[in-house]
Length: 315
Image 1 (cartoon, rainbow, N blue to C red):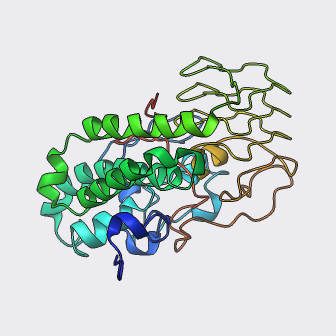
Image 2: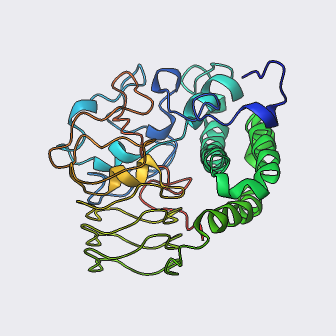
Image 3: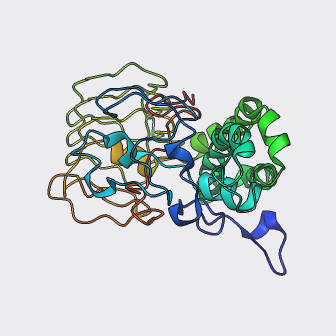
């Protein structure tokens, strides 16, 4: 990544330039090995962290990539590493896989979730820098982005020991301020961290609402007005967004959208694609593509580092 004629802080905010779009071609199947998952509606079987998924082929491809949902692995179709997989594989370990050098496996599996969290932060920082109303904190955001990107290029030894929770906490303060500036004047509802599991919110007026870290699992949000709402860390698994308006949402990720339900009437931010599995949804542009290793609907960004199916609470 280079920034000719400019400092890093001045020129790199685009997710693609930052390497935040998953490139499964360049990864050693780390999400399919490093992370644990439990038999549930998201995964058909139990798998321990560090144990390769039985669907992972020798070439690091998923052998059931096109049939993940029908085979009981919808969780795989919404997970997104934000490009951490290829960063660890090709930058941190310089193209040396855990199969070629088994001695690297333990540390590589520990570094991957740390890197994923750093890349997720980069995604949010880059978005915050696009918010015109957040201009008063743009300098601080640029500094945080440069610092975070620098951390992603540290050695495996440094990354393994990094207190990523402390760094995330510091960055979160900036993201919160950016959100407040972006939503100022909208008088949105304060539902930060609220338990709204299965809530009946059809047609609800939630414009500019603070829904950071809210549990919206299975909520009925059909026709809801969610414009400019802050949805960072909100759990939208199974939430019905049919006909809802999410344009201008703050910190909404493709992963959250993929985990929800929607239809052709759902209005999304221009940066996000309509998931292929949504009712009458067209073929979504895949964020990160891949060689059929996993369904890269773009998703999964809110999965907790170290385990799929549990999400970090970012409040």
